Length: 80
Length: 253
Image (cartoon, rainbow over all chains, first blue to last red; front, side):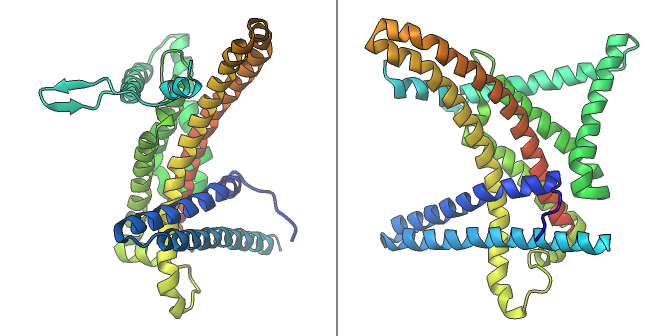
């Protein structure tokens, strides 16, 4: 896939992906830790929270890629 | 000299411990900085926006107009489109406020209030409120909730996708706060650590400490220039990302 010229919006959206992934992971872990403290289920809450956070991060990245891909296709159709 | 204590003393917020009877007033170094910046911006912009016939006065007016045009054409219009007209004042305020708070940290004896997660979280909450408001305004409650699910999603996937989309929107707002906070905190920490190199090396031997002054100060000057750039960049990125998120809520696919 040939890359198109990125606009400032694309740059901002792409460079923010890394921190979004990290934040999703941290939020998942924090939620799991909190549930562990509340219900005394250590260490399962934090493990499941980390897995869920990772899945959420992957989902965010895949969706962003799909979005960029769709924009790319739209631009190509416009050019045709 | 304890290095960790010195860094913590310079980076963290300090309570002034002012009480009004039994009520603890939240007067801290960061809140005072924010208040000072707000008052400064309020009065200086009020003063600058008055029409003046002199040459300098006209230059000042042109400068302000340039700034507003920059935010309008560079941030609001490409992302929010025609619907963004009403949001322009918010974005102008946001950029200038974050920029001034960031730059206030570069002035000796002043603190960087944006290196406090509570401050950036409050700013991100304001931006989250604007995103929520723009979604509710242009789509209504039902349309706004529907907009979370991308078009073309199979019906059985909707219960799975909907919470994911809602959480990812919340995380986007969290990321706004975390990015500004992390950038400002780490930058100032690096500045301080570079200065402390001189004292740490100087403890081993005085001559070594004197020798470390030149390279450490060279790095310090470089990092200070970088921090000035980061202050502008992060203010711009915060404004731009808020506009992008608000735009993606308004123009759902």
